[in-house]
Length: 255
Image (cartoon, rainbow, N blue to C red; front, side, top):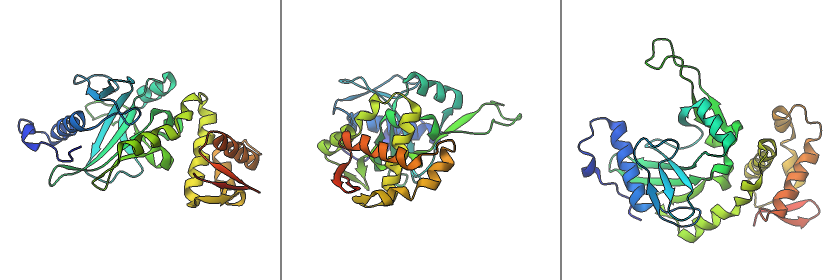
């Protein structure tokens, strides 16, 4: 993988947005492999709905989002209605998030988010465009990547360091069990629990550590009167999937 973009090839673009899109997609087309199977990513034709790339082996679709700013909590996306419809039909692509250095047109960070981490809870509806706007009334959305657990943001390039392919593939497969969870409510509980574990910030933790999130979870699920029981259920599920290891006496460990 080569981290520099070919800025000379984008000289015919006057719009910076068009230049960024061209350079980032051209770079990804030549350098990025599928984080799920290692296959070659092939670029779709311009203006293809939904996705930018498709894996030549597993046929998974990928959408590329590029920015020179920090990728932290919110990523702007397209129409809100279309996004929610895609989530319901399972036709949404996986996401590639690229951060580049605008001074020398090189890649600083690249991460992949598998599509099974996307639930309606992480899609934020934006206010409609004003009546004076060219697309008056259009309603866009933001992807709240800050709500996605750490395990769902798989690093391919981290601070200009290219991660080994095997490490990327292993990280992708680690939570592939989420593909089988069809209910958005059930998946929401699993992802909330994974986030709680992230916030604990320890490889080994106790039930009391996770119970400290009871009040914040009650605000999300006000009709649930058994938050602690639900958390224990999610921990057992994550243990059964190999995401956690049960040590004993209410102690869990991240492998």
